[in-house]
Image 1 (cartoon, one colour):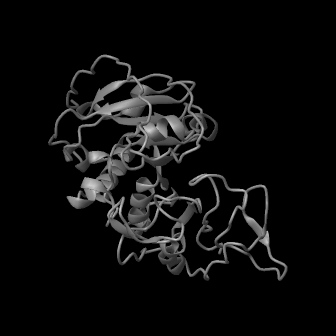
Image 2 (cartoon, one colour):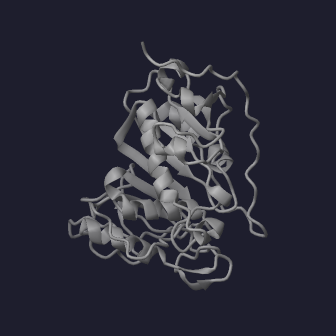
Image 3 (spheres, helix red, strand yellow):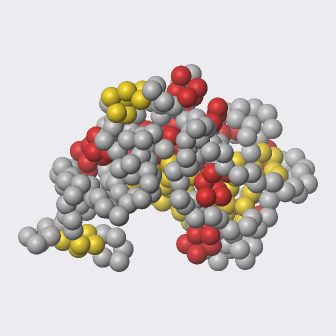
Length: 322
């Protein structure tokens, strides 16, 4: 006889809050708003077995809140972590192909998971593109990306280890394709994505970072990993060209070029083109070649870029295409 499960808690609805602005700084994220929640469920970690089958099928994407009320002696590291903040998770509709990709959306410093959920536009994409999105919360509203940022870096919080446990936990309970797990982060969230790719490149398909820098010493990815980086040249908080010492963040900041360097080395990519170089791209955004017939992949500058964080920046092509 299978072991009994704890009773399911009643349905509840989570009130969304607006994402707080950085203290004294303008918002740097001009990202699209998400669609209205389909439904919200409050579930205990002890009742996660076969969770996907209990939640779906539904004709539309479904948003859940997974609640771990206290540290448990559960079967995996995520349940034993002691992080009690509800995890926001959006699953694709039942019509999505299985197993489906997973995106981990990592908020910026002094914000929480409502920032990516309400501003980054993933909620609408889950329906059309058929992937799941998890919106974790950092401790102390900061991620330990190495030398940055906030209390989490000062206290050496093991955020990379916790994110690994989270991904493993989701894989156990949902039809996640482990070959298509991506980390997407803004600012401090992008920094922790960089660090994760440095330390566990073999466990993810790629990362996408916006307005972030690599803050991990000795980064040497074990294998090539796809990296897409977007950085505004007018960004004053995390400058595109780096900063010898940031009074705001209390650490040196690497430039976009330096941040991408370890990933280029791992993939055997040449040094990037200069920021003012231009090249032709197709409808998918991939360079179609140079006058000499070779592929031009490197740092690209959008001269029409607006305020900091809104344009310009660096891109690295998928490994093997540079």
